Image 1: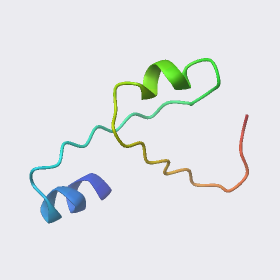
Image 2 (image 1 turned 60 degrees about the horizontal axis):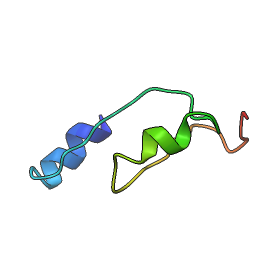
Image 3 (image 1 turned 90 degrees about the horizontal axis):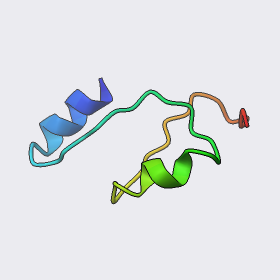
Image 4 (image 1 turned 180 degrees about the horizontal axis):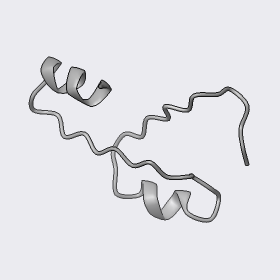
Length: 48
């Protein structure tokens, strides 16, 4: 839903959604490929 709305606002943006558990072991390698990272966590309490 968010991707669709953001694409409607700006069709030039490239949005990639990944449903992963971000951890200290995979965060650096995963995030290096992106300019902007958005955390859409549904809880305020960290799970790690």
